[in-house]
Each structure stands twice: as C-alpha cells, then as structure tokens.
Image (tube, rainbow, N blue to C red; front, side, top):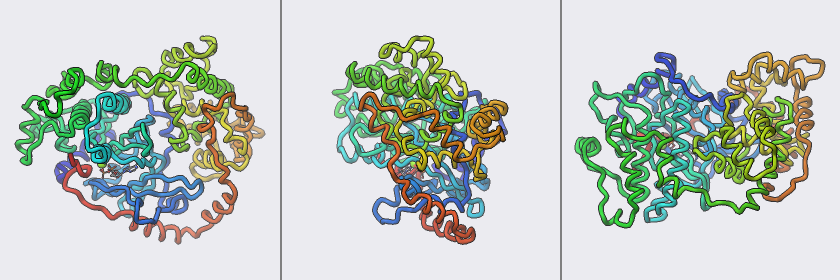
Length: 570
Ligand SMILES: Nc1ncnc2c1ncn2[C@@H]1O[C@H](COP(=O)(O)OP(=O)(O)O)[C@@H](O)[C@H]1O
Ligand SMILES: [Mg+2]
C-alpha cells in the first residue's frame, strides 16, 4: 500500500492540519504538550549518546525510518530515537514531517509511547524523535515467543488498554490509522508489562471533513478504506476495525481474511462475513465473538466507537483489574493523600515544576501510581473526572467531600475539568524524597532547563505560558513568576526555582513503604554532573554540527519496506 500515490494522499490528509480545513473540536491538549520542545541538531549530540554495541542498538526499522537506542548523557537513562525523513514519508514539505511528532506530543496516556523531545534537521530533511523506550518487543514478537494464542482474560485486558488509548486519541482529535500487532510494544519483559501504542507516522488530525487517502497495512484496513477513490470517505472508526483485527489475531493467531492476491483480499474484507473455524474458535466464548463481530462491522456507522467498545461486557468482565486488598488500597491512597495535600497547597510554579519532573521520570518507576490512575479511570477515557476521583477517594479515605473537590481543582493545573495522566503523577509524587537532595538534583536542574527552553538562564512568564500550551493567561503567568522571584523582576533564576520547590515540598517521612519504589525517583547521580554539563556545553559549535551529521549518518540505515509500517507478518 505504501505507493507514492498513497504517500501523496497521506500528505493531503495531513494538510488539514496546516489549516486547510477546520480542525474538529476535541478535548484540550495535555499540559505536557508544551514541554516537548523542538531542538536543533547541535543539541542532539550534547544531550544523547547513541548506544554503540551491535546488539540492541538498532531497535527496528520500517517504512518511515529507523529507530535506535540512545542514552541521555546527564541522567544515563535510555530512550528510543526514531529518525524520519521527508523521503521516507513521501513528502516534499518539512511541515508534514512535523505532523507526526506534533500529534503524538499532545497525547499523555499510560498506553501511548511518550515523546520526550525532538530535533529537526531541515538541511538533511530529517527529524529525530526521542521517545520512551519499550524493551518488551511487539505483540507479534510475543505471539511468536508463546507459539500459541492469548487466552480470553489476557486478550480482553489488553484490548481494554488499547481501547482506552484509542479513545483518548480520538477524543484529542487524532486518528492513528496504522493500529496493528507490530505497532503495539510492551514496555518491558516483566510479566504484566504495560502495552504501548507507537508509530504515529500515518496519524491524522481529525477535521470536519472525512479522510480520503488509502493507507495502512492491508490486513488491518477497514472496508471503507478499500473503496474506489471517488467513493472513499472515512473517519476514525477505521481504528476500531483495526482493533477488531488485532483481537481476532490475538485469540486465533490468524488473520480474519487473507489472500495472496490483493484484489481478492480487498473483496474478502469488503464482503465476506467473519469466519470462526472450529479448530481455533471452538473453545472461545460467544461474548468474545460478539465483541469482534461488532468491531468488524462493514458499515462504519454501525461499528461502535472506542467508548462504546470499552463498555462491551466481554471487555468489562475480563478486564476488571485484580482488586487489591482493601488494606493495601487504603495504605496506598493514604500515601497519595499526603502528596495531594502538599501539592494542593504549593505555589503554582512549584506545581508546574513537579509536572515537568513527573514528565521526565522513567515510566517504570511510576508503576504503583500508574496502577492507581488506571483503577481510578473507571470509564477508560485516559483522564480522571471529578466524579471518578471523588468515588475512589470517598471509598478509601476520610478526606471530606469539599476538600476532595478542592484538591481536584488544584491538580487540574490548566482547568480542563479533567486530570491528565502526568497531572496525576505530578500531584502524587509531591512528597517524594527526590527533593531531599534537591540542591544538586539532576532532575530539578533538568526541569529548570525544560522550562527555560531558550537557555536564557531564567524562567519568565512567556516560558510558563508556552509550557502550559497557551492555556495559562499572561497575567497569571506573571503573578506566578513574581511570587518566586526576588523584587518582582519577572524572572526566576535557578536558585530561586530550587528554593520554590524546596519550600513547597519539604521532605515528609513516608507513612508506608508501598510507594517507596515510586519515591526513589532521584538516584545520587549528581556527582560530576556539573563538570559533565560544562564539558558538553563548552564544545565549539562547528564541531557539534559536524558530529551531529555523523550521528545522523550513523542513525539512518533505512531499509525501505514494501508494506507500510513494517512486517505485517501475521
Ligand atoms: N519507543 C520504542 N521503543 C522500542 N522500540 C521501538 C520504539 N518505537 C519503535 N520501535 C521499533 O522500531 C520499529 C519501527 O518503528 P515505527 O514507529 O513502527 O516506524 P515505522 O513507521 O517505520 O513502522 C518498531 O516496529 C519497533 O520495533
Ligand atoms: Mg510501525
């Protein structure tokens, strides 16, 4: 499918993003969108090392580019770096290249791979996207490893998370358009590791107009995508179809329709009913087939949206989280309440700083908090409403209802009326002992640098409005800065920033150990940090650019593939 024609049409769909058609109304951007900066190539080498060993350095490659494992020099943390080029995306416009990353960076969901920052190299027509590293392999790898299909509770639990991620995308105005086993990775090899949706290379901003370009991976493409050009109009329901195919494959190890001839395959997808051969499906429940039948309805209007699919009884019955014992749940929430109280009482600037720190923490450290977030998010929307927050808090704590509403408002930094994932994390790591050594903490320093995106050496009101994706008005931003700066000069320098954080979050002794893993967020890595930082910044600029080009060369061994998005192997 990845012909030039499709790539051109793809660019046209993306043109909607550039303002050619009205962007469809959607939920507000997550606050983290303003934290993901576009940086220059000179910064790339200053910040990252490519991991050089032959084994494991190259994570994968597909239609859009290659993905390599890199290490951040100051913290030592590893990330995945995807290199996309204008050529691989079939476009002659650099803006089209920005679309993938700009759409993905607005998404803040535990089951979507998080973009951390990106580097643009217009001269070489390439973009380097740094994102969280998933080391557990894709669902294709997992099926090969097992050599058998998933059982129903496992598949339903996975579908529930993927539907939640998809619902979140759609509610934030993004259609993925290439959901498949290859584009879902496990965060790690640990049992029960979190699945993550990746690869927004074909994603599209939803607009008032329907999409028309024919793209995707053939086995996962909905019937409306196979219509002839003049009759081809579709919407985000194509993602629900693709999830139906994913579920069918997880439970049987086979594609619902397959033929070597593309024409025959097209006819089968468009007209043949879903078949459930006895050999693979004899022992499966009526409910799971009913769920698949609904997602694989030929008529997109009859197909459920992600919210309705999440409410299907097969998903709800099997995906219910293993309940924690009431004591553990109560204990965890007591720890969280300590954090919430400290957060609610903190200065706004300290809150934003904590959000930045939460954003940059490796997801694996946040396992306990992620589980709490997911259990509170009962409707799977990927955000918390006041109602959801109130219900869990009322069940397990003695915080008065009025205070619950106040805390909720304090967590909702830009007043969307809902709590995004990173907002929740920020509020719940508030009493973390990472601030015990806040003086020299790499994370506090990095949070400062992320807010001071132009390296001015101070944070001003403009930095804060940018960090809040324009959702913070200028006067409030000025007030926030003046609260922390001496003499209301409109600037907060690093010592003042550090002091604001220290004042807001004095280290509290943990009442229980349940969150101790979460709280160990800042290793004593700072020894030598300043000298390393100074060495990195003192490299002459020309040298940096020269080496960045070498970095680019080392990272772009593209392997053009004939099918979009890689193997599509099953
Ligand atoms: N965040 C990540 N962590 C680990 N591996 C990744 C990550 N993102 C991509 N990969 C690997 O790189 C491959 C290609 O990346 P993807 O974004 O799917 O690009 P393409 O559009 O070329 O298919 C994936 O199939 C996967 O193996
Ligand atoms: Mg892919």
